[in-house]
Image (cartoon, rainbow, N blue to C red; front, side, top):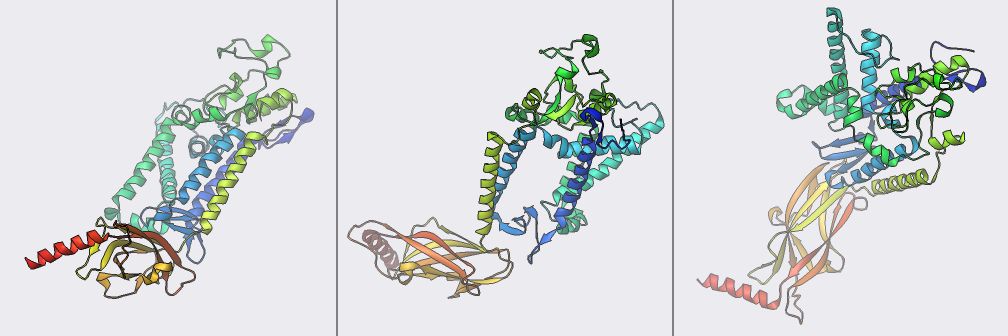
Length: 489
């Protein structure tokens, strides 16, 4: 038999080998950490937008270098749908794989417990015994314990700042950090979250995974007999628990000499959530596969494969490979593909300007001359990276029948709007003729308002449908009589 002190996967006869899921998981942690630390600083394209940024300060959303204004935040709907469907898909496929391999809670606990407390400060004897209770019986150990908390608090500050970079870009964050007096909310939030993270990781620990995390309860709904999970082979190892969960109390070897479980407790000692995997599938299991590594190392000494494997109940029962592609997982992949396609489509329909038109509470105005006006509020937003001059006009067949009047701008037709800036305008639409018909009632006349950048008419244009309220003949006459009487007084 061959062994390896580095705990890498080593082949031995009869197909047994020492698993190295811990090594693979830690490599994944490092890659994920590096990516999350770098992504906020990456800028894309000529506009130098971020890969992802949800800025409430600038009221913009950046997704893969494309900038969306606050009125286009509906894009977030598709992203949230992908997030939740992706979590459901991952759970159906591989159980709580996210918990053991990507969750920040698990990563930070590994950093604090395995690296800081065990490897750096030697407060724990070895990382394979996570059931060890810290005994701070000397002043030196107490000092080391405090140092460990301080070291992690520094890591928490960095991690929290990196999290905030997805909401406050780094180029703004570092400026705000130098001006604490004017940005107390942001910096206070940073300190509060970092403090909570320190308390949660250093003191609450895995109790968060067991009692507080809602995902543990959600995942049980999505499990089926083909879901990947950590499974103890009772046929080879022997039973240690009754079907009702109570312990049998007799070691497997004493029950039957052919049972392979030596009751070494290695799988129990290494479990971060303090469960015995031999009891069966449990909500507390985060699929870190530490128990698989531990059992494979023990069983390799007997030239036998691990009694705890990463498989599915059906695969274990039928002695086959887990069935990953099945109706349920394929359905999730199709749904994810559809949502992603919609996100791409929405991204391609991204506009460089936004126009919103609302009518005032007053239905219409009858002038002394008999002219009929309707009052509107125009909100125009330039979300292009360049300044543009915008023009408004009536579109379609009604272009010659109505005119646009802007009282505050003295006949001005073009309005310069800077990038990511918004202009609010009070606009009058005036009917050029008499639009009373044989039916003596108020009429709603459909209109289309067209706005475009005069310096880029073909590239930046938008249309908005509204209506013009034209009063009945009786209403016009009544308004004019009332004005005439007021004038004579």
